[in-house]
Image (cartoon, rainbow, N blue to C red):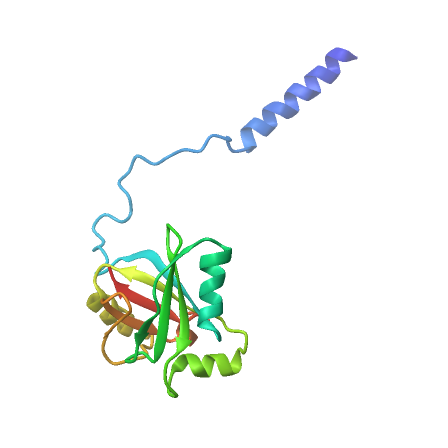
Length: 175
């Protein structure tokens, strides 16, 4: 009886071996499909910062500096953008604290809808902002200004419409 059970088990095992694929992953030695495809005109780089709109810039700055122990910049007014900014250094990226400057500040409108403040936008570096803008326009991504403006780091920036970026306001900045 043991012999017949062994024979059944071996038969089933050999059938499985014929129909089951091996567990070892095979890698192709043929050239990658990307050969002959032109490289991108621009490259999306690292996360530069996450911007947070805050109703009380002094209180939030003190939280990051005094309670959490982060290095924070001085307050910098950017009247052309309608904001005061403070950067919180995190090592691998930064937080940008935004507070309204003037009555027409886009941050004032944001804070009217979000009284406690909150995440406003994310910023990615790009290696060629002009190529990125041209490519994004061709892909029907709406831009929030006709031309790049100089941002808080003294480099050209462009904001992309959140409705075209899955609900997120995205800023691109020349690396």
